[in-house]
Image 1 (cartoon, rainbow, N blue to C red):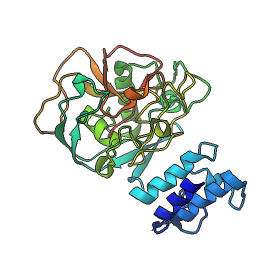
Image 2 (image 1 turned 90 degrees about the vertical axis):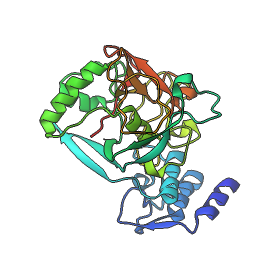
Image 3 (image 1 turned 30 degrees about the vertical axis):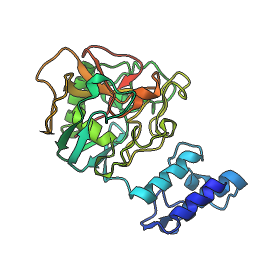
Image 4 (image 1 turned 120 degrees about the vertical axis):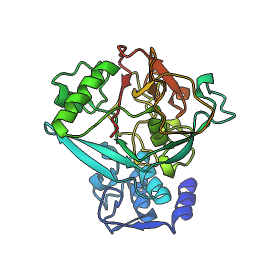
Length: 311
């Protein structure tokens, strides 16, 4: 409780006016420490002044610390980036606008868990793009492809898995026919820039926090399975699960980094393996670090490998 009061004191002067939405828990038109207090009063005192539906900020069916974290992040970092909704065969998915910028790609000096292929850290500039707010769900995959062979069933909001890079190209082609858009896989540089929080980056070790449990499903908390997308806290851009849940295919062939500055890099022109990023429910916390790289042949699939879209 003492820690809670200190946090409230630190942010008591922060507030953001806005139209009604999920962060405005008490419906007064302002996101402030009052909204955090409302959630805590429910958790600590079973105070039902406000409906549970408004207290459940991240809409996962549970009122908990993740909801407090979401409001707190909005107060500290501002509202998440602009988003656009798309619907195919009755299934809606959200793309987040990522403003272009320049960042240092790769592991930072002194990271004890860094692998050699995570360096050297180098300056990269990326143009503006959009990226999926969540990993592609089984529901969306099924709406486009007409089938779903994922290994983890029971909830179509779980990320699709057991799909390889080649299958994803077919999915994207069909999705583009349905929407008239040019969806694609993100480049490795785009993926890392978005995972780091873009121009709102707080330089976290994981995507959205230095505490992996706040933002990722990984081996220590996953209970041996994937979980519904967007049930952990988002990163600075309002993007979910870029650490943990399932590995995410990128478009690039795997290759060594160059030390010099680059603009919109797309990786080697050819290769034998494509890049995956983000870690998964199956692996340790160190695999959920933003800079961690993984590689596999394009025909490889497993129940901890999925993807998210870019545009």
